[in-house]
Image (tube, rainbow, N blue to C red):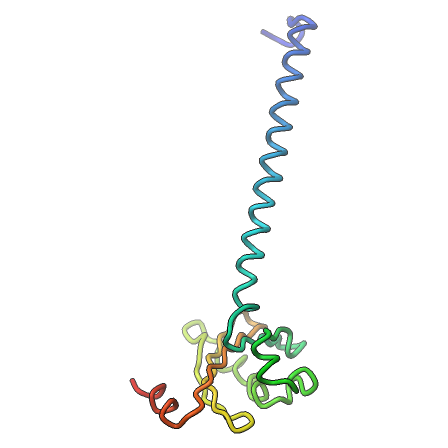
Length: 147
């Protein structure tokens, strides 16, 4: 049946059906968007709540993220920024990790009398993420060096 052949009542009924479908679609879109936002917030909480220091460095902007653990262990990090020993050598990894097969490296570093095993990841061409694990004792350092 063509639209020209439909009665006014049939056209109104079709219009109401289309409106209900559109409203249901809008509600579904809002629900899906809300669920996606909740998942993003949940995922974002991992580095924030991590008890290991997590730091992110942008090639051009320098230090862009530090979690609470990093701020607590390195209270002068915000003031020193890229001059702080925990990140001072990080820029070299933009070059060293910029190969298709190499996106991660480990390095031991001493900061304020404590030793840390840094796991450095190339997240993108312009972004590094560093996890700094405290390996305070020489025994802890040897344990982490074991194959």
